[in-house]
Image (cartoon, rainbow over all chains, first blue to last red):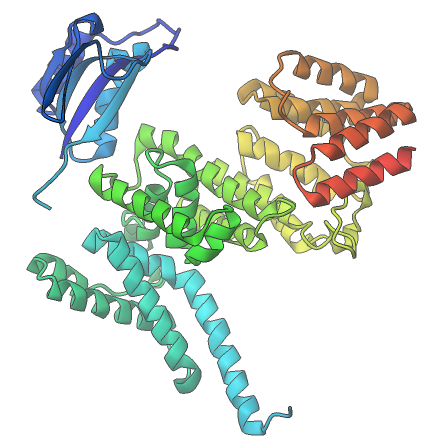
Length: 111
Length: 419
C-alpha cells in the first residue's frame, strides 16, 4: 500500500523540545527498511505559482491556491502494509511535533 | 378477540423464537460479521450476509422451531450466502476455500485448548479495534460499532444522533470506504500500540453508554455498552481499565429504574428510592472494582460511582473519598468538567464555602463559560450555604440553559424549593 505523507507546518507546534528526532536518522531508517520510497523538501511558499485553465484561457497567479496558515513544506512517499504502519513512520518524523503530517493513500485503480 | 389454543401455541412458539433470535443476535452476530470480514475483507458483504441469515431465522424458526445450535445455523447460512455472492463475482479460490471451512466455534468449548486459545485473537476483538480506529471520525466510530457489532438498525442509530437515516447510511458507507481505501488494519494492536489505542476504544464505549444514559438518550445503547464492556473484559483479561469501565457502567446503570419519578421527571441522587437500585449490579461492580488497581482514570470514576451506589442514604455518602478521587483525576486527566465535579465533591465533604472557592478557581480560566451545568452547581452550593433567594435565582438561570426538558424541570423544582 502506497501512502503520500504531506509534511506541513502548524500554528501550534509541540513546545516540548526534549528528545527531538533527527530528520537524517528518520530518512536513513526508513530508506533502509524500504518504507520510504521517495521524499523532497519544497522551496518556500512565496515561490509557489498557481495555474488554472478556464474556458480555454490560462490563468496564472502568485502563491498557493489556498491561503491557509498551514503550509506543505515537503512530502514523502511511503510503502507500508497498512495505515497503522504508516502512522508509526509518520509519528517518528520531526515535523509530527514541529508541524503536522497528513497521510493519504494513493488511489488504487487495480481494485 | 379471543385466541384459539392453536394460536396461543403458535404465539408461544413465536415469542420463544423471538427471544432465541434476540439472544443469538447479541451473542453470535458480531462473531459472524467479524469472521466474514476477516476472510473476505468486505464489510458490506459481511453485514449483508449476516443480516440475511437473521432474516431467514425470523422466517423459519417460529414455524420450524429453533435449531439445536442457533449460532452455528446462522454462521452456516451467512457463510453459504457469502460463498454464493463471491462465486458470482468470481473471487479467487483461496478466499472461497477459507470461507468454506468457516464455522462458529463457541468460546471456552474445549477446556484442553484453553492454553492455545490465548494465541488466537477473537475476530470480534479485531472488529472492535477497527471500528474504533482513531483515523475514523468519532461519531462514525460510535455508529459503526453500533451497526457492525451490536446489529442496531441504521434507522435507530440515526434517530439517536438526530440525523436522517440516509445521512447515517452515508456516514457508515464513508467510514467503511475509508477502512478499505486507507487500509486501516483488521488487527488488535500489540505492545506500545495497544496501550495507546485501548483508551480510544474505551472512550467509544463510554460515549455509547452516555448516549444511552443521558436524559433524552436511547436507553438500549447503555445495555449495548455494558454488553461490549463485558465482551472486552472477557477477551482482554488483565486490562484494569476495561474492568474499571465495566464497573463504572454497572454502578451508573444500577439506578436506571429509580432515576425518574412517576411523571418521568429526573430525580437527583438524594431523592431517589435506593431500594429500587439494581443491587445485584452494584454488588458485581464492587466485586470487579475490588480486583482492579485503583489509580486509572476509569478506576477513579468507578470508585466515585461506588461511593454513591453503596451509600445507605445520600447523607451517608463518603464525600471525602469522592473528593480524594477527584483530586487524583484532576492531576492525571485535568478537564474543566472534572474540576467542576471536584468543587461539588469538596463542597459536600468540607462545606459549601470550600466548594464555592474551588468553583471560582475552576471558572477563572474561562474554560467553563459554555458549560450550562456550572450555574446549577453554583446554585446548589449557594442553597446549602443558606442564601436561598440567590440560590433560587441561580436555579432559574440554570434551567434556562439546561440541555434537556427533564433537566430543566428538575432545576425549576429546586428554584421553587428555595423560593
